[in-house]
Length: 532
Image 1 (cartoon, rainbow, N blue to C red):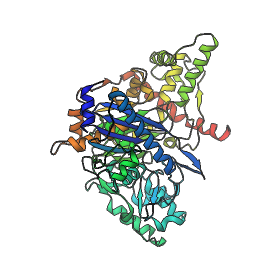
Image 2 (cartoon, rainbow, N blue to C red):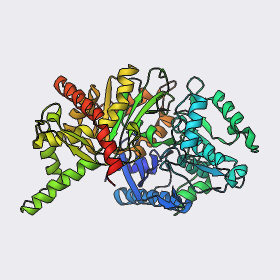
Image 3 (tube, rainbow, N blue to C red):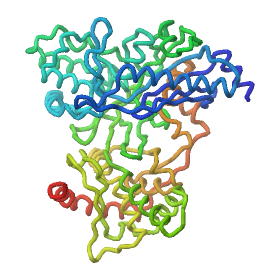
Image 4 (cartoon, rainbow, N blue to C red):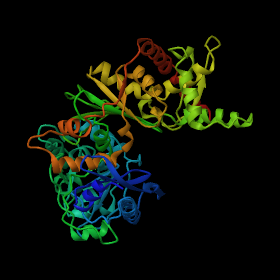
């Protein structure tokens, strides 16, 4: 047991971050050196009720309380003390979705998560009206779709927020959002660091015919930027968070943020010309821009960092799931011949073998579309592997093509940014399961994007650590110290990560593969139309 850590906890010098992800709620306590010293988590799943993906309020609070309790129990177990006070707290959550409340603070409709693709009509109307990409999962799209559907609760709305904003409000009484989270609710004016007032006016004109008793600006949370104080934990809030009653009120909270923003912080990817890419079941890249894009792209979403810089997001629904299924076949085969191979070893053997394959995968083609893929305009998916009689069909090329295709849809979006918009990108940081086998995922990603790719050990700490860092920044920043400087000089100063630069032959090979990938989309369409 560290006496230093024990003293930090007893004197209230620690900082707490809690993030509500789609399958896990995680609480992380960090010390004065920003290193996690205790944690706790709660697993949960959304439910599909009345054609909607949702979590109940009861599920939300039970999850938050259990995650906090497990973290506090970890403190007691490791350091022999009871957690009663911390220096600051931050909350983060999955972005977007729909949570609206009445004048008594009651939830007027079941929480609709980002996963609900039910706002296509609203998304198209608002994108055209604003000349700004409004994805279906955004909160404003959900609100306008509810208006188009003439839902009964609309006249009673006094407040709309996100999951993180809801938790923050109930614990502090403050109706606020961090700017990164707010940028997934409604478009942001980058100069004023607030909602775009011209677009708010356009929206109010659009809905005037419905005679609702509110205007949009009346129901949205206030926008705050990283470093600003966002209220204090009330006595009631302390009891709601810690059901044992040990935690004291009066603790300052930082602005609640979205999981995209906290992911950027946790990977130190918030400076301009930097970015991060998360590659697992799905894959998405977030690139911090130096200027706005020249036009609207349906493939690119625009949000902001927690300090208000513009971020372009390219998101693909499919990444490693089909690749993992193929690896499982090799695991099944190894068991059949009496060779029970550890899965990590099996991944390592096959992934490293892929690096010995031809740069263009020997003419092979695959699509890992387990689900639909918006980047290539497919509403459904059909995983497939295709080869010609002239292609070089061997195991190295076979694994390599499945690694390539895991990034195929993402590359289409990234090519819009890097080639059409000529976005400058000095480095990108990778995290997620695709990078678990050392160097392989990095090299493939570097080939796909033609930029150096780094992986840091801290990338696995996740958004709960990221929001704890934002709370620490709020409390400990020097006068006029920017978030980038704080992270570079006080958090990541000795955590540079290992970078792999793109190999020219790999880059050229990936481009050849992408021509085959793009031309072959007609095969994927035929499979969807003819194979049920």
